Image 1: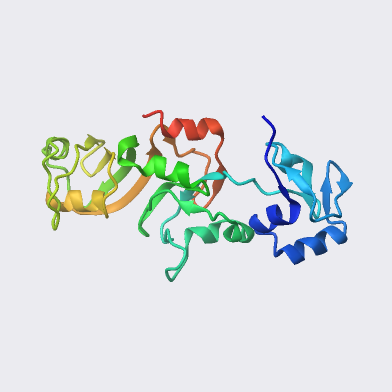
Image 2: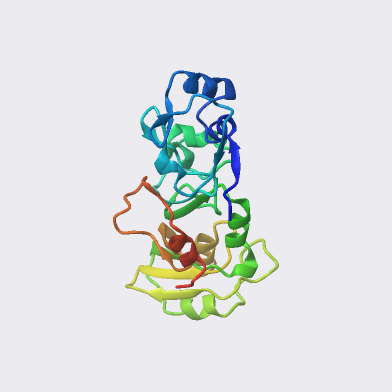
Length: 245
C-alpha cells in the first residue's frame, strides 16, 4: 500500500515545529534534510512512510514521531492530567513542541493528582476511545497503601458486584483484591469511576494513603521507567493493552 503524502509545511506545522511561514524559513535556511539532501521546498509532498522520522532531519535532529503517537508515561505524584488546571501538568513532562501537535496528545483516562503510575497518552482518538470503552473491559491494576489494616472481608465485598458508592445508584462491577500484608494490597478493576479506589475503601471504613497504577490491560509499567519519564509505545505495547493480565 502506498503511504499517504502530505505537504512538508503542513506536516511540520502539525507536529509543532512552527507556523507554515516559519517552516518555509527553515526550508530556505537549509535546516530540513531528507536522506541527507537539503529539502528547500516547503510545499513538497512527503510520503508518510514509517521510517520517515529516521530519514528526515530538522536542524540535524530526527523528525518527531508521526501522527498515531502513543506514549507510556510514569506519572509522578503532584501533577494533574489536564491541559488547563493550575499547577504542574502531565503535558509539562513532554517536549514543549509536542504540546502544539495537531491532533493533540490526550491522556487515556486520568490519574488524580495524588496517584502515581502508568498513564497512556495518544493523538489517535479512535485508539483512545477503544481503550476506555466499557466494552473493551481493559483492566487496570493499582497498588494500594491503607491507613488501617485490612479486616479480611474486603475481597468478598469488592468481588460481589453489589458495592454501592456514596452518591451513586448503580453498584460497581466486581473488583479483584489481592492482599499483600496488613495495609498493602492490589486491586484490579475494569471501570474508571471518579476516585473509584479511594471511594471503595472509604465505603468499607478505611482510607487510602498511597495509590499507584502499575498495569493497564496486559501492559505493565516498566521497572526502568523513572517517575516523570515517558517512552514511545511500540505496536506490541499497544497490543498488550488489550491482551489482558
